[in-house]
Image 1 (cartoon, rainbow, N blue to C red):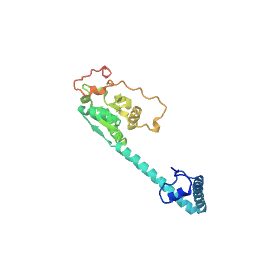
Image 2: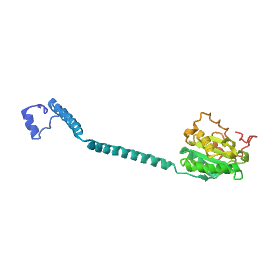
Image 3: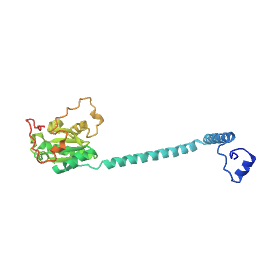
Image 4: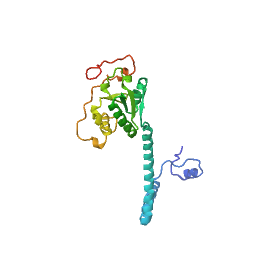
Amino acid sequence: MDDPNADTEWNDILRARGIIPQKDEQTEEEINDLIDEVIAERVAKQTSLEDKTLDELDELEDEEDDRILLEYKMKRMKEMQQISSKEKYGEVRQISKPDFVKEVTEASKECAVIVHLYNDTIPACKLMARHLSELAQRYKAVKFLKIVADQCIPNYPDRNVPTLLVYVNGDIRANMVGAILFGGMKMTVESLRKQLAQTGALPAEPEDDDGQEESRPRKSIYSSSATAALSSDEDDDEYDDRGYANI
C-alpha cells in the first residue's frame, strides 16, 4: 500500500477529496512559517505598546492593577471567612462535670480550651472571672469555660482556687493553681493573658518577648489521662499539704 504521507500528486488529489487524511507531520517549511507567525505577533504587540501614549499605558496598568486587587480581595475574603468560622465563642460559659469530656477534652481537639475552676465566695476568683470574660471577647477562637471547683473535683481545696486548666489537642497542656501566679489581687488582664500565652492557648504578642525565662510549669493535679479523674464521681482525690493531688 502506498504511503499516505508521501508527497505525490496522486496523494494530493486524494487528500483534497477527503479520501485519505492529511499528513501527520508538518514540513520544515510549515514549521518555519509558524515560528515566523509567533515572532510577528510578539513584535506587533511590542510595537503597539511603544505606539501608545502615557495615558493609554496608565489605563492598561490600571486594568492590571484592578485585576490584581480583585484577586487580593477574593483571597482576603476567603481568609476572613475561615477566621470567622473559628471565632465563634466570645464568652465564658458555665459547665458541669458531666459536660467535661465533651466540652473540654473533645473540644480541645479543634481549639484551645481554658477552664476556670472557681469558688464564688473567694475574691480572687471573682477578679479572675472578670478578666477571663474580657479575654474571651478578645480571643473568640478560644473556648473559655468555668466550673465550680469542688463540683469538678471532689474535695478540691479552696486554697487552690482560682485554678486554670488549659487543654490543647485533647490533653491537658497546663494547670495553673492559685492567684499568686497571676499577681494575686493585683492581677490584671495583661498578666493573665501573658501567662496563658506561655501555654500556647493564646497567641503571643510582640511585647511578650522580653527575654525573660518562661515560668516553670506547675505540677499537674492530674496524670496525663486527666479526663479519667473528671469522668467518675467515685474519685475522691487526697491532697498533700500544698494542696496538690497525690498522683
